[in-house]
Image (cartoon, rainbow, N blue to C red; front, side, top):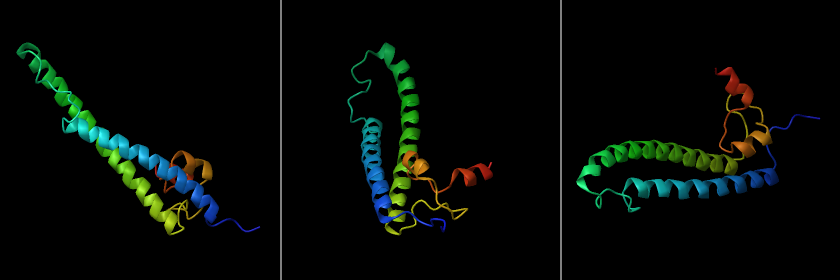
Length: 125
């Protein structure tokens, strides 16, 4: 029996559903982070006394930096998921970009935006 070179249309649809679900959650999380960064969540220091304001502003700056980094990671994750949807449309989803072999379905269910098999990823180290 020949080795499978791509996932069937039914399998691709299963992966599409997983990706769309993760994409919706990721977009909600990203929007939540954006509103926090833009101060739309009402969590600021305007109503605190001047004594604590300096301390809170320092902590607020650190928190904003952490939130900004998290938002950047979330945006990269969203872009990875969107690229995976394009690969599903092209029927190239699940093919390792280095080995050309199929990435195991278990890996794709856990990391649906993966473009490398574990074997290829380990060879990069």
